[in-house]
Amino acid sequence: MSSHHDKIFTHLLCTVCNFPRVTQGRYDHQKRLKLRITCHACGDVLARVESLKKQSRVIPINKSTPTYIHSRELLAQLNPKRTT
Image (cartoon, rainbow, N blue to C red):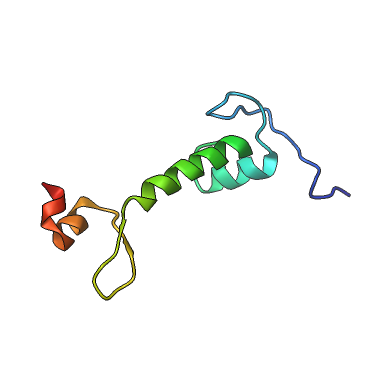
């Protein structure tokens, strides 16, 4: 019986660092969601970078909650001055 600390590494390389540090569970999860295959460390770095990018696209709307702007069209509707 294996505990959660036992890691079974695959023969696949991380697409960022090119080391075979991808666990079987992580590979299965990323493959199922059609994500880029990365080891835990590289995936964490990529997630932090993506989070910082998304933080810069959140704007407060008057008398509402802050909103994530996912498209240029939405930004143009909310504030035409920011798209020029």
